[in-house]
Length: 530
Image 1: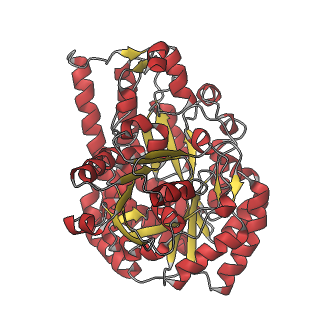
Image 2: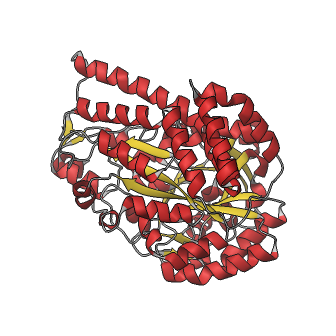
């Protein structure tokens, strides 16, 4: 009997109303979702070559009964904001008697929640998929396959199956250079899932991935999805010259973004090399401007330098910063709103993901809150959106109402169009791009759409946009494509922030009227029994 199998890979829906879905920006570009599912297409490359694979991304296309009829097996899974739909997909598979395999960060963190699935693949897939495949070939239809945390040899990771993607559906496509992060932030689950040793692919591996994308005709934005690209600076510095050579040889078909820690600003050589290679954006977790908070959460790397000077240094290198901030830490002595707003304005960071502190399943924070009896019972079962629409799943030190009020104040201030486009204008003056943006198919159409839609983003948004655009054209025209890019995001961020503010207002109202009741807390002993 021939060893064949038809595999339906389903990427679950992200919960609606997410900071990250950038719905309006996608519409401008004619895309359906920001990022392609890199994890699933990497797993696809680990499967036998003669197995047939079909990928359905529920965020961009419809899943049909014909898809299920075609498949011998279904593979799914993802992150916490996808949990609702991942569980729904498992139910659909069980209803039509299709074996379902679930993997990804959320099942790895909370396997019990996914107990109904036939198979669980926990941890990194590269070195355990062969065990799953062998079990399937033996006729087994249930099992758990677990990789040791942070030990997988990423030099064995194959080139993802980019050919399974409908590339025109996405704003950008991802590749990965490294896994893991050397820091130990209390609230972060990356070090729990992938370890504190930054493991890197070989230069040849990453070049092969870029070659594959290039051969498929893809051009434009490529995101290095590393949780901290500079976690292994030595390896990165050895890799970047080859990436620069590849870009030069191909006439710079790609522009890169990534995520890194603030100490990127300390290394002028590394910043220059990233800029020369055509990196244009980096996400940095700032979390809080308060030193006591950064020390308590073990994010001391942010205390050893001036945040304002560091961000300015990165901007002047031609790379703009997006940032994350969190409200609700135990160390907050009083209102933090004014300090956070001042930090965001002083650093001229337009796009700030400001969220409420959330205790993720596998973090030092969750273990501490359990030990203190402060984690709400059932919070490990929470089917969450993101930190903008869910959070504070524990008994807070400060009054909950005060934290919510601070959060509301910050969002209202930073996503006011005058403030937002003021930061974009200042960014436009600082950004010293080495490479001009290469126009790709759809860029002009997207810009025209932006001009017609900017007035919808809120009162005064259009006027502030035109003022900023003129200022950039006069003082730093090379930055124009990038301020336009950040402006397009406001079509989502402006209305989204107002939506979140409405939700926060409702919760504050419930607290004021005595209708909000804290769930019971969960004790460490109970958690151990569970």
